[in-house]
Image 1: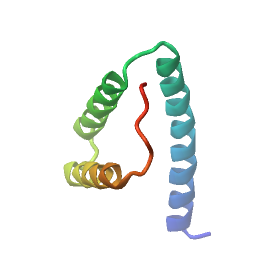
Image 2: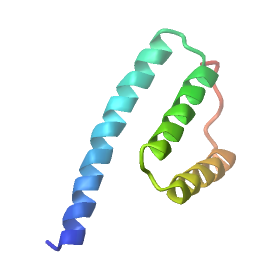
Image 3: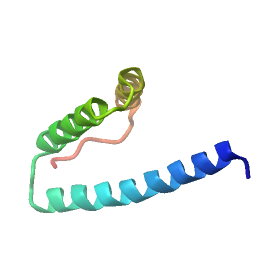
Image 4: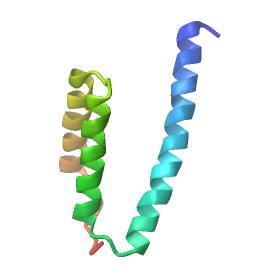
Length: 81
């Protein structure tokens, strides 16, 4: 395995761990009937803090633009919470 492949695998593993942690936290928030707009606001604030802690601003902006595109194209129906 090359160093680039190793880095990619470690990143993929890290992403999987964080997705599980976030999924658990989001599930707990929904169980407490926290409104989806409050959850979204908190997630955006966390992304901004990630950018402030050293993530490349251009990369974070690209993530957010990509996210906006995915949301615009989403076919998942809205729910009450």
